[in-house]
Amino acid sequence: MKETNYVDATRERFEAWLLKANLPTGAKLPSERELCELLDTKRMTLRQVLIELEVESRIFRKNRSGWFITPSRFVYNPKSLSSLNAEAIRQGRQAFWEYLEQGLAQSLPSEVEKVFSLEENTYKVTGWCGLDKHKVFYHESYIDADFAPDFINKLKNKSFAKVWEEEYGQALTIKKLSFKPVNMPEFACKELGVAPNSFGILIEKHRATSDKKVVQIDLEYWRFESVELVIDDL
Image 1 (cartoon, rainbow, N blue to C red):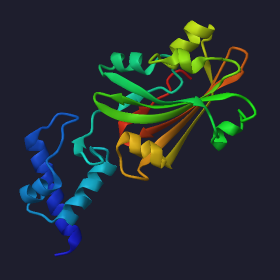
Image 2 (image 1 turned 90 degrees about the horizontal axis):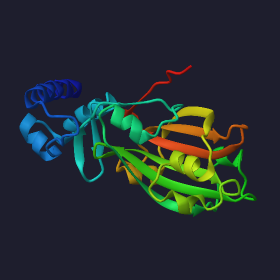
Image 3 (image 1 turned 135 degrees about the vertical axis):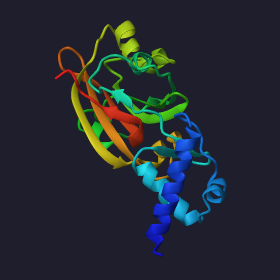
Image 4 (image 1 turned 60 degrees about the horizontal axis):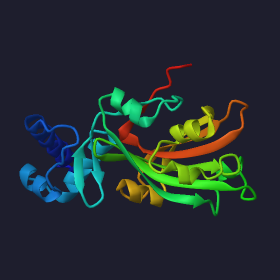
């Protein structure tokens, strides 16, 4: 019997077990050792089945935590001006986030350097956002510090949009939006708890004032299984 048939047979048993177990989204699967015993298979064969299901976005893994049933994808309109929290509530989800680094940028990614330069004052804010207890994307945000002095001290745990509106009287619009499949950088993988070089979607946003001046650039690294990108206001 060829090894591929072992994989197919193990997948059939696993699919049958998943159907019977009827685990809710976000639920943790048994450990790989337990699954091997349950499915009467070898670790290498099980790994191939798990990777197949991961590629199909049916399960996902967290480093040092194990495998989980993938929650439904978050329907995300990158052009929307509403906050992630407001959109999560609308979809019956719970959003949470944390800001990490906040300060003046010491260097700039190439995407940002085309718009801002280090000769200018540029704030850098990093952080992650999650839905229903699972982190879904890591972000780096670069802000024109001359246009918005003291921005990082006003941010605290507010959304960027709220700070722009309440502190600077600005309702920013999206001037540029791009999407790119990438191997996520090490720092993003670490914060999201995924294996190094995991695949993701990079969303680059340039936010501008009413007179088209770009004052904020966001680089968002999304877990590929967590999001469905929909732009419905064309």
